[in-house]
Image 1 (cartoon, rainbow, N blue to C red):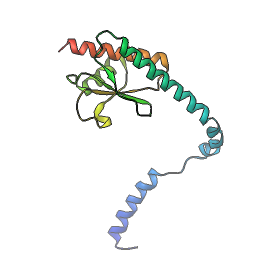
Image 2 (cartoon, helix red, strand yellow):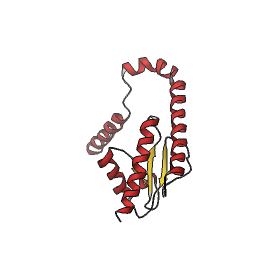
Image 3 (cartoon, rainbow, N blue to C red):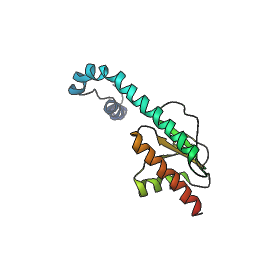
Image 4 (cartoon, rainbow, N blue to C red):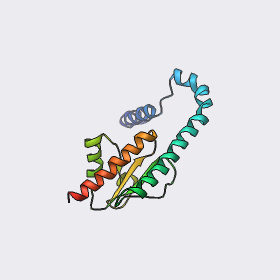
Length: 148
């Protein structure tokens, strides 16, 4: 109740809120018990892969010739922030990885990094894909430095 114009505006806003919180579909709600039963197993699989990829990344950074990329301390989750030379623009590096290799990463400012020179990389890919992606990333950083 209230003034007609205010009621109409409130109804529009309530429609938006309702759309954001739509109930889950019948199929999903029927499968919830089954999904929850396998959640521990799936969580363990993801945790194992993330740990393995993090270990691989650290080893690759250690062994890459003249490596100028480092990993920040992992703080949980499934992304790792990498420190790259700040003379390389985060956006240009991320775009080049997408364009040249279809490798997706995120510029550091997506994670509130205050300056240039950071890149977020997912630790979720299968181990062989992850290792290949890190190699492409390191080679791209090296090439971009040579181009300067």
